[in-house]
Structures are given as structure tokens and as C-alpha cells.
Length: 360
Image (cartoon, rainbow, N blue to C red):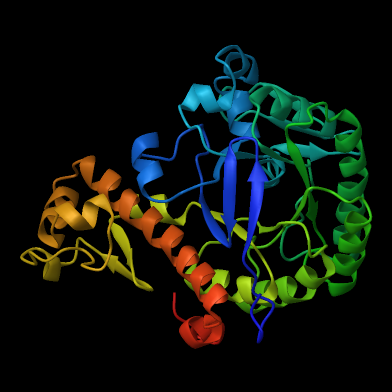
């Protein structure tokens, strides 16, 4: 553990392998990390990969995944997998859903079918999918929202968690609870205290990156993380920029996920040592150097900036694969470097500039 901050390095054991923390986790919503094969994903250094309950329920359906032998076999990934509960996706359907104590009813954006998702149903779906880590079904309040509305949703999230625990049937899956509470410290404190009493396998901080300013995200994380049990993994949901991860790690967070690396790749952007480059810019057309000479990923070891720029300008799909490989490697290696720095006692010396920087 860092002697100047709350940053820490640990190991989280799952049935499909160890996860060394702190760690960035790539998002594979529909049982694939977009444009990247499992073999390519392994080469990035990724360990724990995410998939999404809501999307997999809609397509292809959890029964098909279960009959295929479970999510690991279905997507040919033999490492650890985490499935989100679907709560955030339901939150994003604000114009198409109704929230009640029993659960959420919403219209499928795929075919218009009405779907009723409850805590019990979310857990049953995740049990069928077979991920190593599953998430409790929660209600994610929007930003901004009144204190009373956030209090209601936070209390409902706790009641739903109790129902998730009662429904959970598999001892080989770790069920994480999610701390909600919006931007209100008192609600976050109460929610974290309630969850800590349940002695869960792990804890997530949810309801961030839903529209609030970056400084509020930092304040939420700093106030909430110390309230969670120190001997359990802590997961900050939906966060994956350099600065946000360093700030959260300094507060004691262990795990992160975000669609940033593949989404940026599909827009022609590369993450390079803390910067964000648009490879479509004219200056890269005749730049025959490696994307990042210090990076060991397949893309940087084999292709030039000029070639990547050419692929993007030609709208060749290979561009998205090559940039995704690099961007995922960049963020995984970034958190691995932080892990080494924590062990070496040099976390603040090497990464302290991110704690106050406003850069990407």
C-alpha cells in the first residue's frame, strides 16, 4: 500500500484465474470486445473482461448462452468475466421504462417488446450466463436529481440487493453490491455502511459518469471508498480515463471499466502516453514511425502512423482492430505500471501529476 495515499495493490481470485489490481477491464458488452479477437485481447494483458446482462438477454438470450456451455465457452475467453446487472442500461432508457418496487418495465429498443426486469430476473440471467463476478440489480439515479429522489432510489437499490442475495444460486459466482447515492455524501455514506454490513465478496461504486462534473466524481469517490471494507475489491463503474483512474486508485479503488479504448478506436483516435491523437490528422499521413515506440502491442510493433492513417482514411475495418488493440493495451499497461509503482513506493512520484492535472 502507498504510504502517502490510499493506493493499494492486491490479487482477486476467481474460478477462471487471478486478477491483479489495480486493473483496467475492457468492456465486451455482447460477449465480445468490439473488433478484437479473444487471442488479441489476451495479448493486451487484459485479465477481467465485462459483458452485459441486459444486452445478452435481448440477444441471443441467456438460454442459448447456457446451452453453449456458458459465457466463457460461448465467447472463447478462458479468463475471468464480470457481468453488469443491466441497471445502467435500463437507466439510459429513461423515455422507455417505468420503475416500481417490483422491478423495471421497459420497451425493448430491439423489437419493441415489453420486458419486465426484476432483481430476481437479473440474477437468474447472470446465473445462466455463468460469469465469475455478477452485479446486483440497482437503480441508477440521473444527474441532476433532487435529494429526495436520490434517497428513494438508493433505498430501493438496497432492498433490491437483499432480493438479489436471496435469489443468487451459484457459489462459484461472486455477487458484488453497488453503492448509489448520487452526489449526496450522506446518502453515499449510509449506502456504503449498509452494504459493508452484508460482507459481500466485493463492492462497486455506481452512479458516476452520468453527467456530473469531473470534480464531483472525484469527491464522490474520495468520500465513498474509505467506507468500504479494506479486504474486499472495490470497483468504480464506467470510469477509464487516465486522470480519473489515478485519482480513484489514490483513494483506494481497485478495478475500472470503460468503453473508451474501443470507442475512441472506432473514431480514429489513439491513446498514447496520456494523450489522445486523431490519426486522421494530416500530420500523420507521411509519419512512418511507430504509433508508440515504447509500446509492445502488436500494432506498435508492426505498423506506422502513416499506415494507420491510411486505413482510417480508406475506412478499412482493420484500422479499428489495430487501434483497439493498442488502446486497450495502453490502459491495461497504465494500471499495471501503477501497480508496480505502488509496490516500489513510487506511486506519487510517478503518477502524482495526474492527481491535480486537468488533462485527458
